[in-house]
Length: 359
Image 1 (cartoon, rainbow, N blue to C red):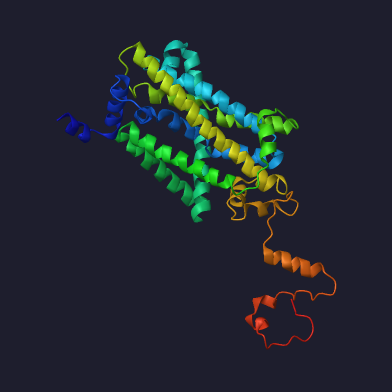
Image 2: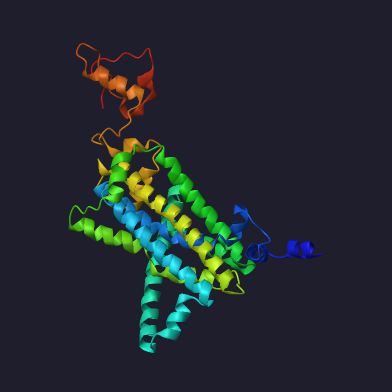
């Protein structure tokens, strides 16, 4: 009877039931702790959003691997803030916004509310435009159509919240996994200088004042207030605890989840900088349009987008090498100029050319 009731329960209810069994000692093993996984993954999507794409690609294009240490620092700060936010929700059963409202004077609360709303709107605008650009890159849609479709997709995902917290966690978890997999594949495609990348990840360096400004932008795009507010709201009533022992266990599991989820997000951000350095730093460091940069990153021959001065990153095809060798060797026949206006008659083997081909 109990098993049939659990089968009929929603996915979120079954998740809570499994988590309760872990806390009571009835379930053990690594797989049992999957019931606690979710809030940090949802929060981690804020660390690999279009704002991070823009700042990381700009950093890699202009300074190569020089600002990787900033990405690592920002990610470590984010881990601390997200862990504290999750702990607040678990221990108090209330989210950060509710605590600020009750603890601060009324003028401070109103000021925080206005600032937070403005920050949320500015951030959502970046995500909205980023989604439209992504759809344009994938399907060639106009930006306006991409914006409308992005709005429908967002509302469609949010409608799953009526079925509880678990469907949203699974959807966003799949999105995070897709992004991470794409960058993992690109790490084997792009020519990365692993030694230099490892050195600049731990060695602080600011080349100029613009690098300092970009470093602040990277930290600002990574450690964002709305993600901190969100995490406490995700954990405040997700797994109810009965005593301090269970609360401590949930907090420890939450800290582990935060470290793993944000470590994955941090590696994705580091991969963004590496990809941008490989594709743009040598030959196109002045590329400013995010859409242009993403188009170049999606080029099937990633290394060739860096240009002739790409520090060995250009990959020439064999036929191109043979043509260039023939062109520069004395006594060899030079390649005939291209046919005028693309006429197929110029390619006929019996056609005789008297004099130079007209362009």
